[in-house]
Length: 238
Image (tube, rainbow, N blue to C red; front, side, top):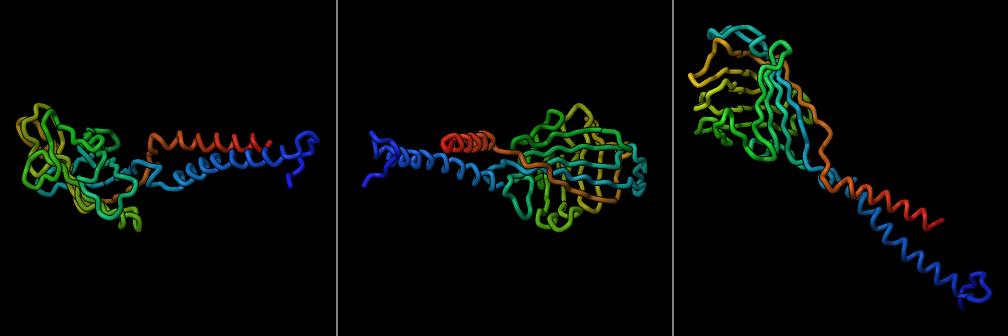
């Protein structure tokens, strides 16, 4: 028996309209559920996790090096990996890597080493990853699990320029390397290294912070689609 819609001419119209509205609501709900699922999953909604590791150290006169903090007393490393990364990450896992050397609060030098997973040259000279057997190499090791328990932990090694002096360049660069115990900021030019204008010393403090994850390009449109779906659902109910 057809449901009476209140319309004396078409008593079954109410059932047909109700069925159509229910069918129209289902796609809207699917859109909302999809957008919500993506928003709830950082691994899907975010492309990269961006970290900043700050290393403060005290220049030491040991070995004839100057104890001048103006020649370097802080190294800041900005680096990123995929949002789902865990455990120990190394130079092969990095999506970006930038070094900054500071002395008494002043920026002395910056080095963009990796961009979008691509190793960048230093002073016009090519670099590679894992500098075990070659100059001008990059190394990095960080334990994300250890850092999750202690914001001062995690870093075990870094090097922007390999185990040998930066070779072949014509300008001035710094070889920044070390670990959570000692660090070195070695000034180098085409004639070689200059320890007398560099800094080396024990680490005073290490701290790593996580910036807001970078959303995937499609995440925002999907969120907007979800919002639009809510609006459409509200309009249908009215």
